[in-house]
Amino acid sequence: MIDGDGDGIISKTDLQEMLGSMGKLNSAEVIEQMLGRKGNSADGMSFPEFLSVMSDLSGEFPEEDELKQCLKNLAEEQSSLNVPLDDLIQSLKDAGFSNPEEQFGKIFKTFSSTQKTTSTKIFKGDSFLATISDD
Image (cartoon, rainbow, N blue to C red; front, side, top):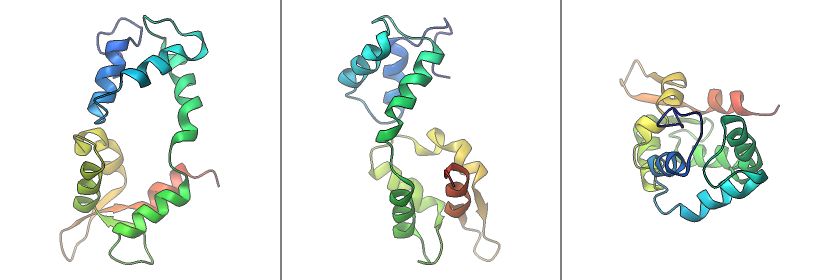
């Protein structure tokens, strides 16, 4: 998915397209930093090198407590982390994601269900956090 042209190298162009699809349009500096890590060439990196770079950057992702608080802010009931999927999608758009339905589609499909009484799609935040938690 990341290697758009299928040549086995994640190039600068591939990274630009990936970051652009995430709503990060002005990403030239980030791409240069990614390509400069671990001695990657300016032409690109292999998938294992990409995974290594992303692992290094993972400390920049939100902590579990931050994710819980965000989900609680969106939840209809404060005792739950279940969030109306439409509200979560709108919040992601407000945060700068250009197409969260596509970008997070697999996650939404895995962790969402439809409420029988209201036919509202609900993102099951508790289940999602349980799968990504270190506990």
